[in-house]
Length: 261
Image (cartoon, rainbow, N blue to C red; front, side, top):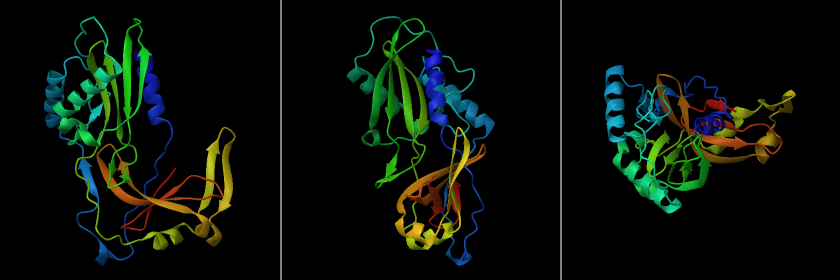
């Protein structure tokens, strides 16, 4: 079971590298004091109280809470031994996970179970040959806009939910008016290099030209910029180029390129 958990973690964290930059906007008069939504690291005393409460509510869990109070894998979190017996059916596993979420809204960020959609439900065999269910949800969306990097992985064992990591954000501020619509955001990428990294190293596709900007595609996303101390939820244009390379993300309020994958 431990090996399987580690495989899941590796798959979740391997993929994107974040490079954030300054958030100064072109016209300071257009700054929005409510933007971006920011979640700060919890004081240690508060976090310890929350972890204790979470462990008491969920005595069989091998996971706990991270520094922001969200469900996470944390060192030293091992719950009580689970009574042996029958295992959930798939339908029972889903119901049990939903019951866990409804009991822990402050730790999952899910206030409405209708927002929770399962993308994949699979079985896994643990080290003692016990059968577990692994349930993975889709990313959180707000009015059809995806929040990158959200969602959950849940584990059951026998007839208990025993692990959960991931979260939704319960309150995300989305400005009514953007300072940078897509046509104003695109020119920010002119002259930027398009590239990917592969086994052979960096592969360049050249620099962004006006022709690339005419042919690129774009959609709106919400992009969490994470550090150890805080999470900023930034609304951004995700811009992709047919010529290749990773997508760019341009903040709709500051006009800054907040991330290059």
